[in-house]
Image 1 (cartoon, rainbow, N blue to C red):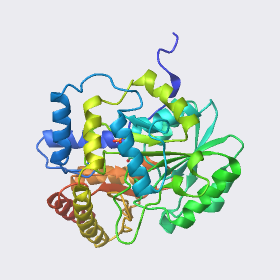
Image 2: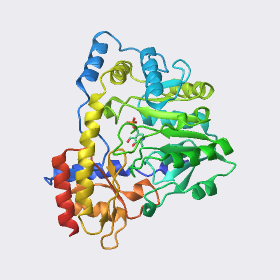
Image 3: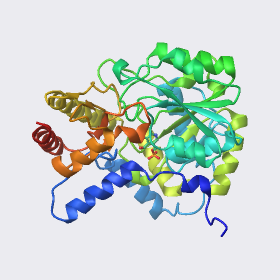
Image 4: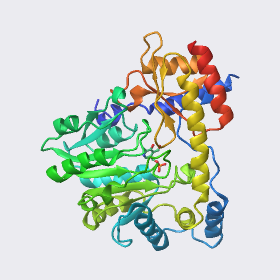
Length: 389
Ligand SMILES: Cc1ncc(COP(=O)(O)O)c(C=O)c1O
């Protein structure tokens, strides 16, 4: 019989973060109190002024299709934000597209770029969706391994070795999910030199942009000399404004590429939801102290949890520089990351994501989010300590 679905989709694995959450839910339904540190969804409510802007937009009838690239007010607000926070100039009419989430921004940008067999470099460990997206578009993901022993610092030689004439693009993610790293100017310079030399695109996923700690500062890749016209900058409201369920993201790209990406958006979703875009304007133009307050609270949790994990024998947890994940290496009875994640949920009743979900480089790491309450984190740390000891 003819195969009834696409081989490339059949070959994709289920999202491990979703699988972990499903198991957590099952255990919870059978009465076990599981602390879920599996998924990266802020526990804060969306700030009230943003919610109000969406309600008002609905009441006023902003409930129809809007321009595929986004409502003009939001595109202008995004261009102003790029200029103010990232020192990147994008034309709001021709170089910005509002999308239904950062995830879709990445997908439509890749769709506009890739020919079958094109290679896309991703730094391993990497967020779980880059590789499936590339495969769905008939591209070839190529891992550039980063070493946990070096705290995932970008290795210029490893990057050079993986560039071929088929390399079409590289995906950067800083602040990083899962490692919590923020790329330094020196690391960014390595990538920009390679992009210039080989003329590759760079997709810069900056979805965790404002969530940085201590002295670490995020630099937008497109702000580096010569990089604006080789870069697609991906960002969105999900993480910065606690708006994961609203599905609102955006991208900035040079006009000729943006025109191509827009065709994909038109045929796939038409536009991002209309009244949600009004909320986006309120988010970007309204008071920003809500973001600073959330980041300060993440910082408090980060410090608590890094110390708590490092106090457990066999756990080595670098302090995250940005985003809201911990990515410790755990040495326990020779277990690999999948066995560790299973052990954590079944014995410690703490849902975590195995390092294997993010690539091949982290066989002994697990990822935990601290975008949850301090009470949950305390409980998780206690339960992990008891189980591992
Ligand atoms: C690195 C990274 N990029 C992009 C996204 C997508 O975010 P959204 O589609 O909610 O904007 C996520 C969400 O978890 C992420 O961790």
